[in-house]
Amino acid sequence: MVSIFDLLKEYIESGRIKLDKSKIHHTYTVHDPCNYVRKSQIAFGDNYGELSRWVAKQCIDESLYREMCEDYMNNFCCGAGGGAWAMPYDEERLAYGKVKADQIKDTGAEIVIAPCHNCRDQIMKGLPKVHDMGNYHETLYTWELVAKALVIEPWSQEEIDKAHAERDAQFERDGVELEEEE
Amino acid sequence: MGEAIKVDRKNRKIPVVPEMADRCYTCGTCGGGCPATGLVPGWDPRKAIRAIVFGMEQEVIDSKWPWVCTLCGRCQYQCPMGIQLMRTFRACRTARARDKVPGPIHKGTMMNLERGNNLGIPRDDFLFLLAELGVEMENDEEQPCPGFYVPVDKEGANIIVTINSKEPFGEPDDMKFWWRIFYAAKEDWTVSSVNWEGVNWGLFSGDDPSMKIQVARVIENARRLKAKTILYPE
Image (cartoon, rainbow over all chains, first blue to last red; front, side):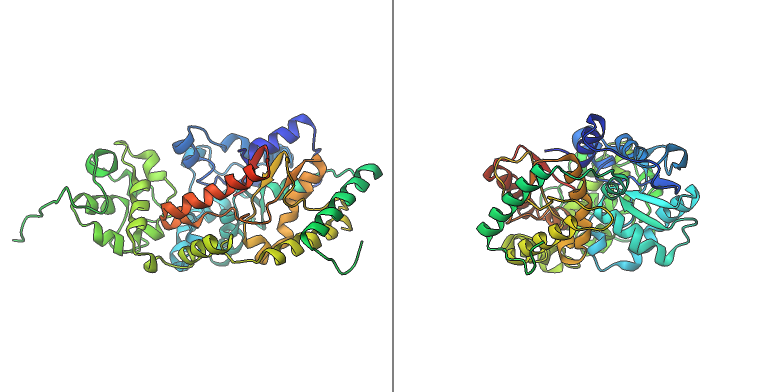
């Protein structure tokens, strides 16, 4: 079992992926999902507050980073945690999220990095509908940010041919037929 | 004058042991720092804990409180007496009758047990979608990834990854973020064709048996396919 942060750290530090910090020029902040930080600390005795920020800073220049909460163990929930995004209490969920919206506004950041599906949906699709979030204009998953900053080097012809052979065998086995080949 | 409250310490839905609630000094640290305070009239974390201590747990269980609370754990982390508020409020969710669980999280949990994912996406549709998106990635104008495909049920991969069903259901392009990273890293990875769900709604609905089944499936997939590592991007 490996967390997304541990895996991304390994990829970045070992040079398995290359990131270009000059692709994005917007100010950004990092949200702390309860499950990756506080609840991880409570349940497992460790948390990803530092590493989550570190990964983001490998993708956009650190000078553009704006801290949302120095004390990440006490950062606030987005308001949609615990399944609340899917629950019918929209009014309460959005009122709860005002704390998060105010935090984001206070940072002055344009991009919010959210390493959680649920937090991302609340910050991207929920909060901007009802709260003033200042300079904010978009939310990215941590792995979405990494994918944006990624320098993709195409594989060699040999690698491509091998992958195509494996793919074709898999499609044959599973009965997958695509209308148009390549 | 009303009658004094008699606290039945034996027959309780939410067990009151010192770790759960008995030690509460009613200091209000929990409620003071909780964004949900005031959202459900009559309730905040401190009041809910006091109600449970006094044997009024059914009122808490029947209220919206344990569901508007997002189980963020901030109260529990700060409680000077070490009371496990988050665990207690989740126990209130567990004590709610299953047909009274708000929203789709219980229905989704049952759907998951029956069909392998919370949204009931059929296997063939899932595999076809992965195949189509793979071709799109190969031919992408901005970031072409020649040779990319989604390895399904590949034995002995380094990483097996779960999928959040909302993505194949409604936001399929969002799966490509991880896939581009795997492509660039030349990762040896795979996805299971069955029980690939990464979202565990039993955790949120307070349904421990279903939650454990969901976790066991993720592990079972890894064992069946002899994958070395589970990546759980939730």
